[in-house]
Picture 1 (cartoon, rainbow, N blue to C red):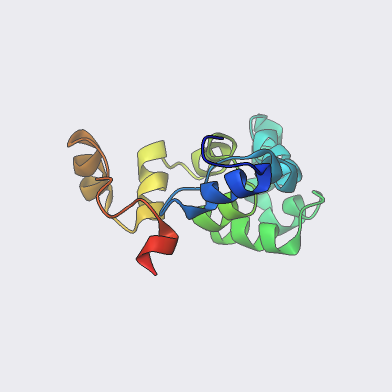
Picture 2 (picture 1 turned 120 degrees about the vertical axis):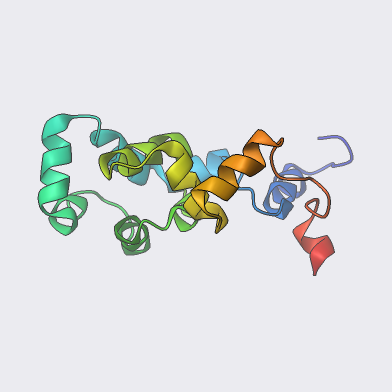
Length: 136
């Protein structure tokens, strides 16, 4: 908490990192049922039920409608905003037959090939990526 005297001020800084969602306790609480849904897909019988009727299966979970719609749309960035944990959400894209690289590339707006090349080259440059507030 260097430079901060207030925990809320400190945590607010986590929301100021471009292209990054830090998985905080607040996000974990917000996404609890969303992440439990995703983890349910570890069981073959649940994957079968999900693939047979996604809406019916997801309606069994006490998530917000916004979370449900984001899952159905496979909007992974929105799901992270709504409390999803990428490692739990991996169960959703794995059920869809996507690799981690394929799914994450959709979150960047890059092709799989361009995303892989960026990562092999060392990842996203931190230049110009320090502050959302500073970019405004």
